[in-house]
Length: 75
Image 1 (cartoon, rainbow, N blue to C red):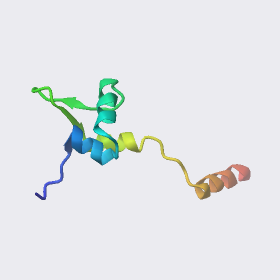
Image 2 (tube, rainbow, N blue to C red; image 1 turned 90 degrees about the vertical axis):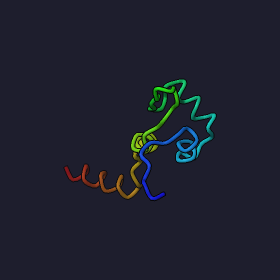
Image 3 (spheres, one colour; image 1 turned 45 degrees about the vertical axis):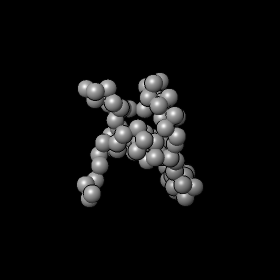
Image 4 (tube, helix red, strand yellow; image 1 turned 180 degrees about the vertical axis):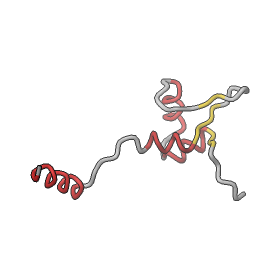
């Protein structure tokens, strides 16, 4: 099916993040990762939130750090 999914099951979310389901379930129980519970008590994840979690901290490239350092030395 061609529909882009926005909500993933635990299995799909674990696959998306490249981790084991067990690891993800532990993160859910420790409330480390944002998730949702359905009325039937199933756990779901929103792709945008998984992406935000995975990309939480952007590490700048060496080139970016060097250009920042040059700007600072000019001030």
